[in-house]
Image (cartoon, rainbow, N blue to C red):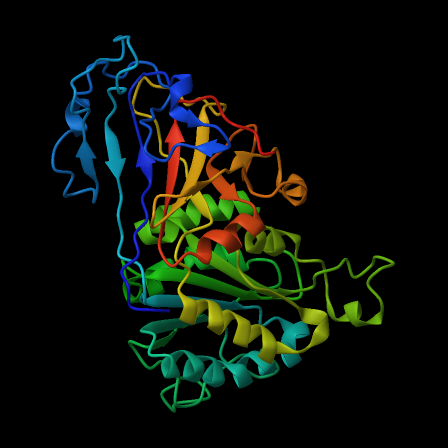
Length: 391
């Protein structure tokens, strides 16, 4: 990745306004058009209410309509709209990687694979001059428990029961992961590893398990994001059973899996991460693929939390649009599909994590690949115009 500065923006307009037809361009979306969130109870004069100001504490800068036109004005003038722009310098970024490894009795061999690959993983990242910190949630070896302890250079040399080497590597004590609780343990154990994470870092989560999660994907995404602002958008990777061990399509290899890791697969798909099949018992290619994502430092996120409306306001799920543009301001159209399954039938698209009660906007896998390929670009999530369906 070049050292050029790369910028992205999340635009949220929080006034009770409407969008006219002149905000759309034929064949795509107009990236410069004003937009607004369809709410009730907002200010109609563009003042922005009590949130107006420099925005230094929140990290936002706010811009009001320079013409002073109000929402009720006619004649095709610009829409009065407070635009909140969140900008970040993107390029080589600091990276924090959290491994949560199932060390239950059925994972003896797999825990050994993880232990073998951790040093080559970290060496590959360091060779690319990426500033990375690695957290390991896993039990230390104990009697018949497989456990994990990492030798130097990543670890400190204190195995079998002490290997933390801060700040680049932290093995959280008493962080055992059972068959189906990796996601809940990631949340429970946060006080032990949270201080190591950095606010400006991109966070990667890697789960290795032969079972499925008892916690639904949506619950994890919500609770994990509540722990810290930088965890609101993360990249999830998993080495799990990718097929039902009891299904006819699985074959003999799936005897290694207790259950298909459907929850983990869902999180991988939502965040554009790497998925590895536990049945293959080939961990090196998966770790190498994750390392490449870390080295690349994904330029733009592939899912976005929907901001909470102000008190007395309501969110209209059918008045949201997603826009992407490159550094020259050239947009490409991205419409909504009803579910991830419908992504395959469109060129580009996005969908809600839960259509009935949406909390996140997720772009389709092919769209995720496209925006992460930008040398420079911007993402804008705009509220207030009728949602455009994917074509």
